[in-house]
Image 1 (cartoon, rainbow, N blue to C red):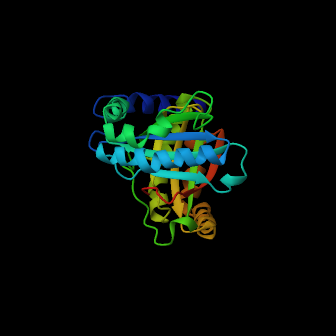
Image 2: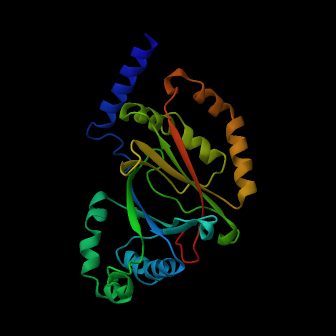
Length: 261
């Protein structure tokens, strides 16, 4: 009986969020996370030069601010080196039309010439992936973290929560929004940049979010406070939210010297 009640509650939730007008009082942003997979210092420099000198300036001309560029802590020692680019969009239409608009931006084409005209036998990266997300209703727009120390000392934590099915995934999203998990992060000072449901990506169904800290010590202290908080203990013990995550991926990042956040 409990299983059936939970199923119908979840089904009601999915139907509710699909109805016209749901959360329309707060227009939600869309996000893209681009991941460059690179194998050499030369490739890393070429992507860095392109992002810094051509891509981010072009995004600003498109009215897209606060683009973040990050590298995993210890990136130099990784066999698969990566560069993460976080791009906030006001609408899905702004995202969909970006490539066409950049193709008409002569300054972008000139500044990005080396990267854009790379030869088949000397590409600037091994592979590139794109993750497209929609912001949570509890935090409809990204926020620039209120950190005061040097960017090079900061820790940005990117998390991905996978769920076993689409229906159970909606339950975890509900836990963040209506269940108050986002509010709890805010109350404890996690300096979140964004929370979002993945609309297109390789690990679906999943959600992703990024929190920020002045250093790893601060990060550990914040998570300890989170685990001990009465509200987290309450909602994490609720049968309605039981077993709604099947895998958690945690990645520690640092901003590049040209990152917008």
